[in-house]
Structure formats: structure tokens, C-alpha cells
Length: 591
Image (cartoon, rainbow, N blue to C red; front, side):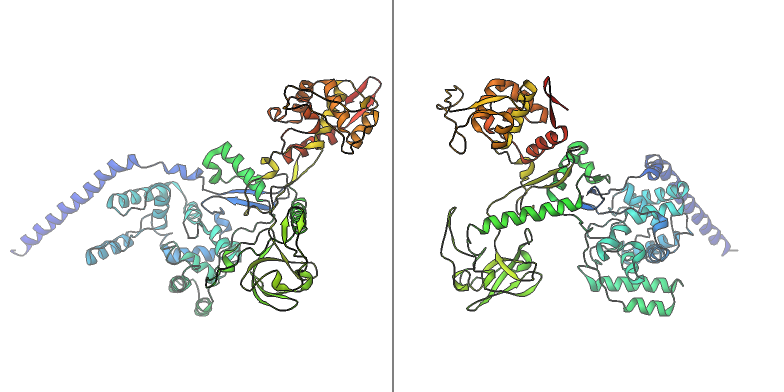
């Protein structure tokens, strides 16, 4: 009897304490739950997906965005990969209601035992709640909100929907968010191409994506991978032989960016700026795929043609010497830190003999430049002068010099140099004005200034077709006669008296417009502009989409003294080519 009374008292105290705890939890839930976000938003969630730029054919040009993500549906995720994640993160995922009370009890026991929050007890559903709605701070209030949200999510979404959100949202290192991006970045593969060992490596990353990174810490990644494989074996998901084979696999992860299929960085930057102007920072996160009018073949040929022309022009003016010559006792920089520009490879001179130059070439190893590859290198003296032709390699370079080399079609190495000049190239389709190729310089990494759209230069005689088109609009015909004779202008808008001449220095008298344009006669062009009026010509030029504020309001306009970009000049000729002109009995008409 004496024993039963204290026992009853203890039971009453336990009941009161339990009632208090339950009441407290209920009260806290009534306070917190109305403040929780609406989980229905998860049904229409917008994952942060980078901006991608493509050619007309759908070949990748560039990707912009802090987070790399390739969204996938749950049906696209291999079952084995799902099993690996569940084994590593939440093996009771399909059994619990969003909160695994066994896991929470283990975490609570660990807290009581050590006084430290070593285990969070988070389920995959709780991780979804945290990743989409909460911060990662380790506080009891955040954990309680996480639990309540997880329960709420489980009531609204199916297990498959929760898994799909988790597998697309989770951070896995190297800016990879989601399993699709991780497979591409670490292994350069689609999900269905991954091996079991690779799946286990990826599944092991959510706990500590930086520490367990297979690129930066392969040993730690291997340990974590083998733990995941062990858990899969314990759960009966793989057999002994499969476990042994996967654990024995070498870790092969390396960084793989999405393969850029067409080199068009100047166009990519134009697209990026346009998308930022339209959408702000959302351009980097809302998954825009921009398909340009570029044609892959045209762009590749434009890159090659411009680079070849610039290099050949530059080399004809002589050799300016090595790119870098280390001072005595100075250690030269590693070739790995020096970029390849415009296909010209950095190389270090390692030895010289009477006829050849031995070099160590970035990404190629040893190479030999025979006499035909360096004999061209007459020293550059000035724009129009070169020094004597070298007879021995030591007159051109020294051991230790950093130089540039290229490989020709016959597999021979040639000494070369980065051109000191720049250029641009634009190709338009006359039918609709679509840009099929655009190159803004020798190499975007060398200079980001886009000369195709930013370099304003005087077009010279290239502008004359605009003047002649305006004259046809004004009533002239291709048979109209204009006198090709000396003239002197005392124009107040010009600094001095102007005496223009033809390029040949000769004068040909009355000349029909069609011949004057063919021969690019300066004096006919000037008199023609004088006849139709400068204002009329400038207003007509606006029809080509030109910024007329950059066109002079004087007769020098006839000789192309305005400031236009290569793209604007290409546009003029594309429009003229598309529209054409013909002569009728009433005069020239636009067709």
C-alpha cells in the first residue's frame, strides 16, 4: 500500500508533465502554423535555371548564371539513384509522415549525451521545407518551423512530388543544384549514363558538398561514397558482388561544363545585355533559352576567316619579339596559367640549334619549329619597315622566352604572335536581315570590346550607295549625267577651303550615275549630294536604321565622313540587296 501511493503520485506527475508538453506543443503550433508559408506554392515552383544562348540549329553558345541546374522529372531519375539518396539521407522516407520521430529521438539523445547538436534528424521532406522556405541557421525555432512545414507539405504533396523537388533543389557542390547538373558537372553524363559508384558519390554530397567534393577532395568523397554503398547493402538494395565492384571503382570525377558547341562570345554577350535590360537579374535565374539567328557553320567560318586575316596581315609587318622574356634568375609563369587566344598556343622556348627552335607547348608537350616556321620573322621597325631576314634562331628568340605557336595543315609548328591590330566581321541574310555570323574581335578573352557593334569608323566610299539611293528617290536615274570636274567648296561648316579629288587624280567630265558609282568617282558623288541636298540625304539614310546624329550635315557626307559600325554598314547593303532598284519611265522606284 505504501509502495502504490508514491507510484500513483509519480504517474500523476508524468501525466501532468506530458499534458503540459502536449499542450505547449499544441499552443506553439497554433501560434506558428498560421505564420508558415503556403506550401501550394511548391506546385508552381520556379527553380533557378541559368540563361542559355543557342544558335539557330540549337547548338549551345553560352550559359550565364550563378546556379547550374538541369531540371528533371522524377520519371527521368534512375530508381537506383533514388535508392542511393534514400539510403544516405532518409531510408524511412516512404514510411514516415514527413517527420521521422525515430530520427528526432536519436538526435535528441545525442544532444543530451554530448551537449552538442551533432545530428539534425531531418527527413528529405524537412530538407525540402528548409531549402524552399527557411534558412539554414541551427535554432530550435527554425527546427520547429521545419517540422510543422514538413507535416504540412506531406498533407499537400505526394511522395513523388516531394522527391522531385528535393532532387532538383539540393546543392551538390561546384555550383551544381540538383542531380541533373551534378551528373553533367562531375561526370559529363546524363543521369541514365551514371554508374552505381557515381550515383553513390552524388548521393553522398548533400551532407557536406564542399568537404565531400569528388573534384577537390577525392579521398573524402570515396569514403562518403563507400558509406552510401554500405547503407544500400544493409537495406538489401544491392548484393555482395555489386557492393564490392562499386567500392573498387576509381573516382573519376572532373569538372565538366556544358559543352559550348559554337564559339560566339560576342553574340552571347549581346544577348546577355539585352536579356538583363528586359528582365533584370531574373534573366540569370528564370531558365530563359535564347535561340539566335546565328548559323553554326557561318559562325565557325567567320571566326576562322577573321583570325587568319588578322594574323597574316600582322605577320607581314614583321616580328615584334617574344611575348615575355623572364629576367635573369626569375622563374617563368606556368604555361597552364596563360590562355590560348585565337587558336594561338602559348609555348616556352627550351632549346635552340642552328636551324630549329625547341619549345614546350601548352596542352601539347614538346614541339619543334623548323626553319620555315621562323625565317619569316624579320624584326618590326615601323608600320612600313622591317629589319633583315634572320639566318639563325637565336636572332629571333632566346631560351626561356614565352612565344606563340600554331600548327598548320601539314602538322608543322610555326612561330607566330598575337596581332597588334583588331577587326570585326558580320554576315547578314538579305531576305530578312538575320545575323548569321558576327565576330567582334580576334578573341573575346583578349578584348571584350565588340567592334562589330561598338567601333564607329568612317565608312568612306562604302557609304556612296546610300547617297546614290537617295538620288534615285529624289528623281535621278542611273543614266543621269553629272559633271566629273574640279570643284572648290568654301563651306562654313568646314575648317578650310575644300578641294576634293578623285582617287586617280584625274577628271572625266560628264558621267552617268551608274558608271560614277561603279568607278567610285568622288566629285560626282559630291555634286550629286549637293544637287539633292544634305538634309534630304540624311533623312533618307535614316530609312536604313542609322543614327543620323553621327552623320555630318555637310558635303563630306558624300565621301563617307560619318561614323558607322560594321553592323550598320552590313545592314545598309543587306537592305539594298533585298530591296534592289529598277528604272521605270517615271524614274527610279523602290521595289
